[in-house]
Image 1 (tube, rainbow, N blue to C red):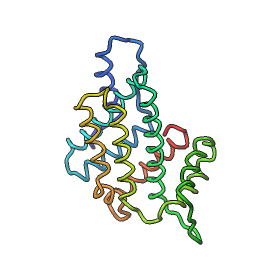
Image 2 (cartoon, rainbow, N blue to C red):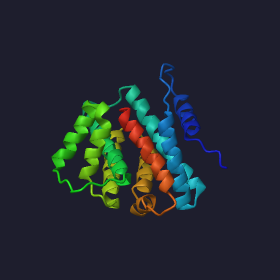
Image 3 (cartoon, helix red, strand yellow):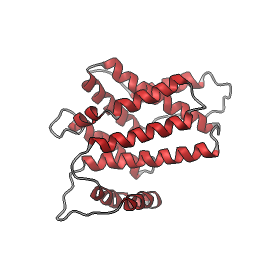
Length: 225
């Protein structure tokens, strides 16, 4: 069995980046166990989907490098007030994406459909932030707002919006090479065909998707996402 561990990869990436910095007081960045498990599952899905082990590893490596570099920028207060607002909007969109990904995976049934406005989505997301202890109940409400049939365009559009906000956030802070890494990661995961295969209920990734969504749900409940 292949010995692949995203946490080890993250540690190597952070050491390479932070070793070039003069300020020894920089707090070491890390990926928690839940996030690591999600990345491992994403790697396994990507490797199977592309049939290319090196490409699957490169996507995860690029993702980790971007996360660590942005964390270092935050640690050193490099972002302006306007950029911090962009970062906050990115976080909200990522949060929405996680809830949407989970809702598409959930097997939800009810007697009659519930139709709510777009502002109801916003209200639920706000309540989830204010009252994390109600996360399971709010997650169910959010599921009721999403079409019961998987729509690859929904997740793809959310990821594309996340990519654009992230590129805006780091536009003056990171190199063109890092911008390329961001594009590489989001292009891979927002690919409609990739998403279709990932959410195929009869496909080979059913177990992987379950683990990914379980991890996302845990991060949401813990207020980490």
